[in-house]
Structures are given as structure tokens and as C-alpha cells.
Length: 530
Image (cartoon, rainbow, N blue to C red; front, side, top):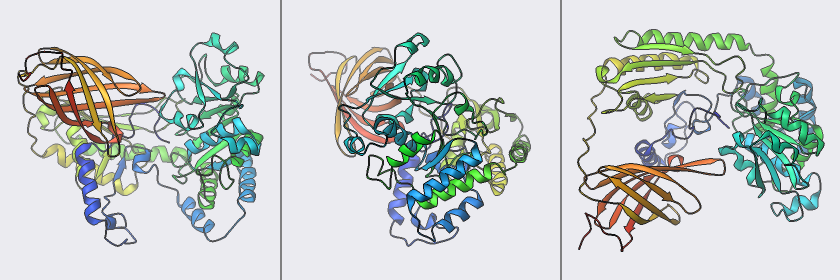
């Protein structure tokens, strides 16, 4: 998993660059694979410089040299997988001070394996029933602050999520149906509904507590989450630990972790599809071995030096300022400094959002941590650089590219000025979204005051408020609502033709699709055809 707060880790490729990239891949798909520096380019894929952090969409972190070596050497022999995990589990316990450890196919897979283990244990009959929960424990308690896009890893077992909202509920929320507690590490896990408070009650009911600490640094002997009472803590292998991207690290109670392994591949159970190979297992062990050997203070100093180098370059541009922000000492997740660069977009001639997109679309391709500033809006602009996963050769490239663009920005046309609405869309509309496979009927209720739109977007299973504008006969509006732990967002653009609208809707990480809508016939309004 990736950064847990502050960023949407999958908003990287917006509609234009994503479609252009997809087209280039299709054009070059027949090219033979070329080994070496141009391997990705030989199949039409453009590598990126990662100045953003440990995001899965840009392949997480750079594995350590020792990890690469361990994975390569592991691939050269056959082993019996149960024996391998037993040996690795013992070694992980020795290094970390936890009772036991296992390796999974990523952090989410580890959470799923723990959920299966909490329900079925070692009982093979129960294992085969999953995800049919009839007669089994079928509830997982999650404090409200822990609902997140990754709790699908728990829900995929078919469990009912019981949200814990008030400390007074701790005395009554557990029952014979409670299989597990899931907690997302971060803000909240030290409070009145934090790990320690919940674990004290969960222990009385023999309910395991699993903490998702995906992007955190390792805290060892003792582990901070296990010390608070967690049964198991789960980490992403391919983030700050710099192990394999497709690996997760689980530390905690031996019995629960051995059951989690039994519910996973190579065994024939629910987790069979979440297979982790010998290469990832040994690579993850090597990464943990290296964690206790790495000079973390020297790494931090190197990151600061890189940011100082970039800052010195950009501050040569008149009107550009920069500052380095460092996380508080108690922040464990995505623990990295960050360079914040600011300027007046009106004076420089380019906004931070334009720099961010330009760097994504052009060569050298650089993914910055953020880019802000809106043309014809708030031109106060900024970009940020995270050195967490940069390599030494990246620093000069990023510094030179920022200096070049801020001193000689390409010309950007201002977006067209909005015009007075020529149509009225107030009323109820039935919309049809055509996906790449399948379609859905949504209902839209618009209220219009001059150019401003408000209203409600009723999707298939939930609803959210919408807001937007009408310019001429062009309508643009956005909506957002939550389903379980995920926030879904829609950005609609359409052309109004009487009682019909047609256009494109952007669904964030899920890409673009087309949509059409028709107004309910009993309604009247300016813009209707006779």
C-alpha cells in the first residue's frame, strides 16, 4: 500500500496523458522486449522519475541491492514452501522481537489472510466455506476513523463491518459474531478509540486486533503497535522498508500468523489467489535484515542535501521561494522531508498545476508530489518535491528541469471565459453511463441559479451532493460520495441539446467514460425544444 493521508495516490494520470500513453502502448505493443536501460521503452512504456513518494501507481520504492540479490539467488533453487515460511518466520521473530512473522503478497493480501484466519483458523472445513459465512463469525469491528480505501481487503471475505464511533460502545460492541478488529495506523490510533483502548476490550472476548501500518517505518523491540496490544501488525514490503513491491510483512502472534499462512497459498483456501513466491519471501527477509543495518540518519541527511540542491537552483529565479518541511518525530508513516516551492503564476507565466502536468506529459518525465495554482483563478502557485524514492542521478534532472521551466515557461492559453447560460437544466434527469464493459443508470436533480448548479447525484447504490456551472450550453459539475471506505468522485462535462445532454465523465482513478441524460418529460424550462 501507499501514502495513507494527504494525497490521492491514484490521481496521477489525468484523462489527457492517460489516453495518450495508452495510445503509445498500443502502437508499440508488437515491439520485442529489449533488456537493459530501455526495457520499458521497448514496449512503449515511458519510465518516470519518482519525486512523489511510495505510491503503488508508480511502482512503490526502489528495492535495495541486497533485496535484488536475495530474490535472484532465491530463484535458483526449489524449496518446500511451508518449510520456507517456518524458517523465515523464526528469523523475522529473532530480528524484530515479535513472536512470529510471515511474508504475504503485499500489505492488503496480509490483511485479507488475517481476516480469513480470524474466521476459519486452521479448520479446513471452514476454510473451504469461505466466503460463505453462514454459521461462522461474520463481523469485523473498525473504528470510524479507520474506514479507508484499503479496508476492501477485509470486506472481500463478505464480512459485515461494524463501525465503532464512541468509546462508550466498547463495552457492548463485541459479540459471538465478532471475528476481528481492523485499525488503520495513523491519526486516531493513540486516542480514546486507539489500539490500546480497543485491544483491552477485544482481549476479553478473544478477538484479534490487526493494525494496518502499510507505509510506516519499522519499530522494533518493541514494535509500537504490538506493544499497544495489537495481535498482528501488517506492513507494505515495497515502501520505506524497500523490499519487493509485491510483498507484505506481518509481525505478531504466532498462532494467528501461522493460521494466516494456512489460509493462503500454497494451500487450497480463500487466499490461494494471493500467492507470494519464494523470491518475494526471501527478498522481504533481506529487506528486514537490512533495516537494522541501514544508517537511517545518513539517509535523512542525504534527502535534505538533495532538496537543498534543488532549492538552490529554483531560487535563482526571481520571485520563487522554497522551504523544507519535516514531519513530527512521532510520525511513522511516509516519514520523509519535503521541498515546497512557491511563486506567483501570473508573474512567472505558469501555474503549479501546469508544471505538474507538463512534467508528467513530457521528457524527462518527472512525477512531482503536488502542483497547485489555477489559471484565471488563484494563480498563487506551488509544487512540492519528495526525495524519499529518488536516486542520486535524479536530483540534477529535477533541479535543472524546474529551473528551465520557471525561467522559460511554455506558452499556455487561458481557458475560455465563461459565458451566460443559454439553457436551463433545472429539474430531474435520468443519466446513463457507458463503461468499457457494462453501463449504469444514475439520476440527477439540478437546481440552477444563473450559471451556478447545485443538486443531488443519485448513483446505483448511494448518493452525493453535486455542484457545477452552466456556460452557454455546456454543463460542468462534480459530485462525491462514499461507499464503504472509498470516496467516489465524478466530474461530468456535457453539451445540452434541449432535453438531452451528452458528454464525458471522469471517475478519478477509474478513468473516463461517456454519459448521456434525458430530462423527465413533465418538466418545462428555457432550452426545451417544442
